[in-house]
Image 1 (cartoon, protein in one colour):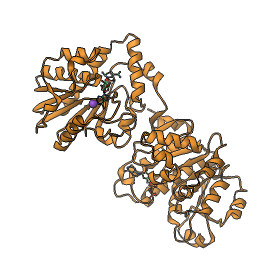
Image 2: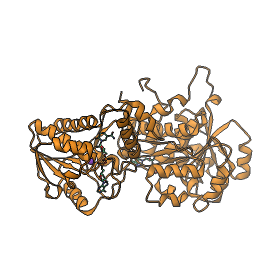
Image 3: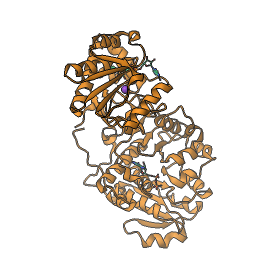
Image 4: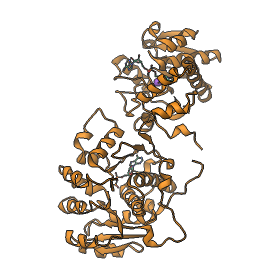
Length: 497
Ligand SMILES: NC(=O)C1=CN([C@@H]2O[C@H](COP(=O)(O)OP(=O)(O)OC[C@H]3O[C@@H](n4cnc5c(N)ncnc54)[C@H](O)[C@@H]3O)[C@@H](O)[C@H]2O)[C@@H](O)CC1
Ligand SMILES: Nc1ncnc2c1ncn2[C@@H]1O[C@H](COP(=O)(O)OP(=O)(O)O)[C@@H](O)[C@H]1O
Ligand SMILES: [K+]
């Protein structure tokens, strides 16, 4: 079992508050810095025992303080250590100043560092306190070190990486390992930050969890512990109708495959029945290629209304291969009182008309609408939010969820699931071979299958994203969307969480 802190995320601002409260509660803050610095030196010795020289780059704040502690610990272990400092060390404050004064080794200005083969760089320039974009001399040094491919162990965060958004400002170290303290920050999990960190180690420096819990915000990693209590439970008395009936709308004759992928995934995710609702022209092609999935003619708004008379129809997926336009808009709005996954063409159909969609779904409390945009679709539905450079992916998904009153699944390698109430989860179990045509259709079907079984929308969306990643991991590299749909299965939850 992974340590508890691996699942919780804490923003840099909240970490500063934790730091403050820890000091106020009488905890020795220099002691915390010493534990942090020693953990960094232990990681460097463990991972790079053969380094010819360890160059510790120390910045002007407490991240630099951790660096001085690590440098002294390494020096005492007999390593050839050289500190390169940014700014005047005489200006360091409190704990960082004490750490600097306790360092007895070699010291030179940062500008004199030239990356050499055999070096290990320990990056203690900036951590959670990065408050603005890096200036040119530091940018150039980071670029030179990255270009030289010298290994870098980062303290807390690779310098330049924004711990809130996961974006470099404007560049960041490419670390092979990052040692952070107590809990990861969103920037460790969001892309490209996740890739810039290398492996991440969360080291407990002894801040009590009650202090961390007091500052824990709305953002966490998408793990079963968040939603496992809401997973559908299969009892001995189950009947197919008790497991829910999912409807997936098919596109025209030339575009039916996407809906079939969704339908199969919904069935594999546990829906008791799945129907493909198809226009007359697409009935034959769908019927010829489905067995467990049923097919029913739904041509237009009038036949949809008749179809909706059957209240056992518990959830709907609209969008995969459906076609962009008026029909998709009319269908979506007709489903405003039902549990709906709006994906792909269903989303694109509301480009420049998103206010209609948001107005129709505004009153549902709790929301029953899940939207699953990739980056392009997100920009079509939420153009203002998408172009706001000040927001990271989590803040964008949160803003989108709030203004649409929907659960927003903002897809990608770091899919974010956000709820109108501000809760957000970042997914990290999805392998890169999910980047293949049709895998999004499978995701929409899984979420639809979970909604059909009665899971609340936020939990269904988050569990669906997780199940999608698990299915992809089971198949492995080379996966096609057909393999993925076939590999979906309900989650077996380890009780150890
Ligand atoms: N939170 C905690 O409880 C602990 C934090 N520790 C360390 O403390 C760090 C945070 O310390 P600080 O808040 O001092 O922050 P940092 O050390 O990350 O950076 C803050 C300093 O950098 C300056 N600065 C920020 N952005 C800059 C830029 N773009 N260009 C030039 N200067 C810039 C600030 O004015 C300030 O002087 C963490 O990353 C971690 O390494 C550890 O000592 C252990 C305990
Ligand atoms: N590099 C990646 N790593 C992990 N998951 C990814 C990656 N790229 C895409 N995905 C996932 O694959 C799915 C692709 O969906 P989408 O872009 O809608 O494709 P399609 O329309 O072809 O189905 C999403 O769930 C997305 O999160
Ligand atoms: K750092």
